[in-house]
Length: 312
Image (cartoon, rainbow, N blue to C red; front, side, top):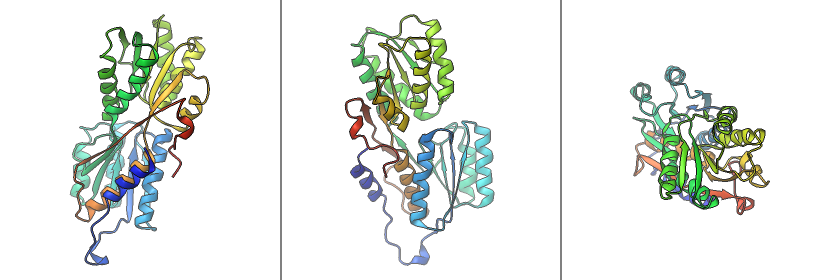
């Protein structure tokens, strides 16, 4: 996403002027629970959120934890934030619907809760990428590269709203082409390189003819490509994904099977999440509960001009 668009998004969330400094609620403590801090995407999101929190209050205390896509673990983390009396919680919900009781407990304690990256039922607001669009543009590129025909795999992931939306967008695009056959769409790469490597090994044993693979995030794309190389099946294969991660930038600068990724901006997502939450804390709700950030397709052709996650 262009910096000008991010700046505009942040500006649109500016707080109304308060009658006096004493009337503004302080952001003293921020709790963040994300999918996995082993994923650079969430590390960038936490950095953006922390930067914005420190901008609001240089003395703000930020605690970030990894739920590892485990709902029960995330419940415990949110309860710990409640016990600590944090001012705000950012949550990447392990389950967008089942997270509701924990969110209600936090709100009953006077804590503002913002969903980031995925939807979170009951959250005061949500900030996420337009994941349906991300799936659409990534799979449109894939379809074009395989000349709109052949066997395609959709490598699924953890069933959070972001992943579900990406798969929905991808299927909507691929469904326009009768000569494209989706031969697998239910394997879970678990959002990780290692998980996708194992799943990918299975693909290249089961299927003798694979034209393209859409992976729901960049770590999975990289793991899948490693499996393809091991099976000597990477030549002529087209892999696309979603994230625009630093590792994908490197892949796109080589002769990799990975040829495109619909980029997200997790750093700005963290910023906007905190900005939105602080506004809500002080009586200003956003015009829309959900803020959708537009993805941009990164390819070999435009990667050199791509402003990545850390360029802030």
